[in-house]
Length: 115
Image (tube, rainbow, N blue to C red; front, side, top):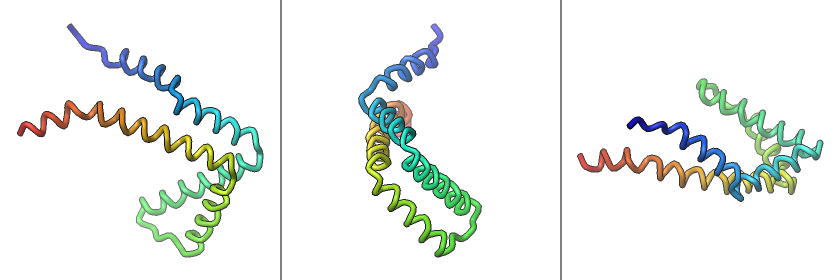
Protein backbone atom coordinates (compact mmCIF):
# COMPACT_ATOMS: atom_id res chain seq x y z
CA UNK A 1 0.00 0.00 0.00
CA UNK A 2 1.47 3.32 -1.06
CA UNK A 3 1.65 6.11 1.47
CA UNK A 4 0.74 9.57 0.27
CA UNK A 5 2.40 11.87 2.76
CA UNK A 6 1.12 14.92 0.91
CA UNK A 7 -2.47 14.20 1.95
CA UNK A 8 -1.32 14.23 5.56
CA UNK A 9 0.73 17.39 5.06
CA UNK A 10 -2.29 19.16 3.56
CA UNK A 11 -4.33 18.14 6.61
CA UNK A 12 -1.53 19.42 8.83
CA UNK A 13 -1.57 22.75 7.00
CA UNK A 14 -5.28 23.10 7.70
CA UNK A 15 -4.73 22.26 11.36
CA UNK A 16 -1.78 24.66 11.49
CA UNK A 17 -3.95 27.53 10.25
CA UNK A 18 -6.46 26.86 13.02
CA UNK A 19 -3.91 26.96 15.86
CA UNK A 20 -4.00 29.78 18.36
CA UNK A 21 -0.41 30.68 17.46
CA UNK A 22 -1.19 31.11 13.77
CA UNK A 23 -4.37 33.04 14.46
CA UNK A 24 -2.50 35.41 16.80
CA UNK A 25 0.06 36.09 14.08
CA UNK A 26 -2.64 36.53 11.45
CA UNK A 27 -4.40 39.10 13.65
CA UNK A 28 -1.15 40.91 14.45
CA UNK A 29 -0.22 41.11 10.76
CA UNK A 30 -3.66 42.54 9.98
CA UNK A 31 -3.19 45.19 12.67
CA UNK A 32 0.22 46.22 11.32
CA UNK A 33 -1.09 46.25 7.76
CA UNK A 34 -4.02 48.48 8.75
CA UNK A 35 -1.69 51.04 10.36
CA UNK A 36 0.20 52.90 7.60
CA UNK A 37 2.96 54.10 9.92
CA UNK A 38 3.56 50.66 11.43
CA UNK A 39 3.32 49.00 8.02
CA UNK A 40 5.89 51.32 6.42
CA UNK A 41 8.23 50.99 9.40
CA UNK A 42 8.02 47.21 9.28
CA UNK A 43 8.63 47.14 5.52
CA UNK A 44 11.71 49.31 6.01
CA UNK A 45 12.91 47.03 8.82
CA UNK A 46 12.35 43.86 6.77
CA UNK A 47 13.93 45.28 3.60
CA UNK A 48 16.98 46.39 5.55
CA UNK A 49 17.34 42.93 7.10
CA UNK A 50 17.15 41.27 3.68
CA UNK A 51 19.71 43.67 2.21
CA UNK A 52 22.18 43.08 5.04
CA UNK A 53 21.71 39.29 4.87
CA UNK A 54 22.39 39.35 1.13
CA UNK A 55 25.55 41.35 1.67
CA UNK A 56 26.75 38.86 4.28
CA UNK A 57 25.97 35.89 2.04
CA UNK A 58 27.94 37.48 -0.78
CA UNK A 59 30.90 38.05 1.52
CA UNK A 60 30.53 41.81 1.46
CA UNK A 61 31.34 43.78 4.56
CA UNK A 62 28.60 45.69 6.32
CA UNK A 63 29.67 49.23 7.02
CA UNK A 64 29.38 50.82 10.43
CA UNK A 65 26.89 53.28 8.94
CA UNK A 66 24.71 50.43 7.67
CA UNK A 67 24.94 48.68 11.02
CA UNK A 68 23.93 51.81 12.91
CA UNK A 69 21.05 52.40 10.51
CA UNK A 70 19.89 48.83 10.98
CA UNK A 71 20.04 49.13 14.76
CA UNK A 72 18.08 52.39 14.72
CA UNK A 73 15.43 50.91 12.43
CA UNK A 74 15.18 47.75 14.54
CA UNK A 75 14.80 49.79 17.70
CA UNK A 76 12.10 51.96 16.14
CA UNK A 77 10.26 48.85 14.93
CA UNK A 78 10.44 47.21 18.35
CA UNK A 79 9.15 50.36 20.03
CA UNK A 80 6.00 50.22 17.91
CA UNK A 81 3.46 48.22 19.96
CA UNK A 82 1.78 46.69 16.90
CA UNK A 83 5.06 45.56 15.36
CA UNK A 84 6.28 44.26 18.72
CA UNK A 85 3.07 42.27 19.13
CA UNK A 86 3.49 40.84 15.63
CA UNK A 87 7.12 39.84 16.30
CA UNK A 88 6.12 38.17 19.58
CA UNK A 89 3.34 36.26 17.81
CA UNK A 90 5.83 35.20 15.15
CA UNK A 91 8.20 33.89 17.83
CA UNK A 92 5.39 31.83 19.37
CA UNK A 93 4.56 30.34 16.00
CA UNK A 94 8.24 29.63 15.32
CA UNK A 95 8.49 27.67 18.56
CA UNK A 96 5.56 25.51 17.51
CA UNK A 97 7.13 24.94 14.08
CA UNK A 98 10.40 23.89 15.74
CA UNK A 99 8.51 21.38 17.89
CA UNK A 100 6.76 19.94 14.83
CA UNK A 101 10.08 19.73 13.00
CA UNK A 102 11.65 17.83 15.92
CA UNK A 103 8.83 15.28 15.73
CA UNK A 104 9.20 14.92 11.95
CA UNK A 105 12.95 14.41 12.21
CA UNK A 106 12.75 11.71 14.91
CA UNK A 107 12.63 8.77 12.44
CA UNK A 108 15.74 10.01 10.65
CA UNK A 109 17.59 10.58 13.91
CA UNK A 110 16.71 7.10 15.11
CA UNK A 111 18.20 5.59 11.95
CA UNK A 112 21.56 7.18 12.65
CA UNK A 113 21.45 6.50 16.39
CA UNK A 114 21.38 2.77 15.69
CA UNK A 115 24.69 2.94 13.81
